[in-house]
Image (cartoon, rainbow, N blue to C red; front, side, top):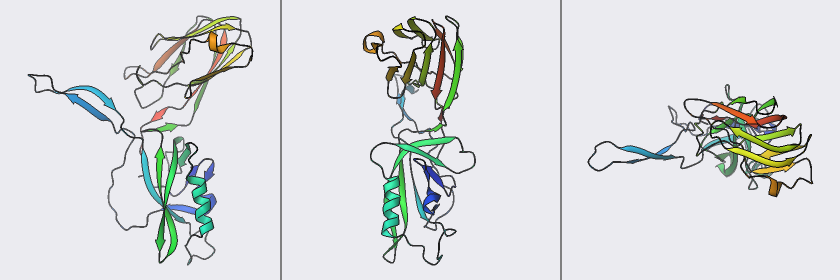
Length: 275
């Protein structure tokens, strides 16, 4: 784990609670941590051969990490009293240990300014002489890797004229594991809208669009909506959501719309980095 003393979670900072990341045990030396590239490979040896073929690879688990927190002596009214009250523990665990959904987690380490994880925590108390001196937290994330802060790119598109979008992810997001970005499409003419990506030649289709209509796509949750409540999306949409694909040879996704429009693409590139 990299060295950091403060972090942000769900819009609040650990320092807001007058706490810091620490380490209570005295062990030292080198340690090995996940770097977002813990892949399990499946191999098979054909009959009569001594060479093993690679036929599948998967991420078996999401990234997790454990660390400890204690009172920051800089904020302590009495540095000789580093203990946490029941009320302080309650407030910390209410903030961190959420069961509703993942929240954004960022650390204050140099080089990590634009990197985040989606996660939630479990917590255990660390006691000394019957009093609580800190908490041991375990972060559980939603993926084997981290993300960069959202990238937002806008295009002013002419009908049947391609435009290029470059995926900056560390992960190779092939046809079987694409990224689904958020999109906002503003139609400038009436018609049946189509959007094709050169990387897979799949086409998003949405019929009966109107000029000035805004189509919003939530890629992660596979949800489409329109600024026109009268648009019958259930029957007019072919339920193919645009994808971003990144092979080792090229990161360029060439999209081609068939109508004049404005297109905004929002996504978080994948970063294979440890915590």
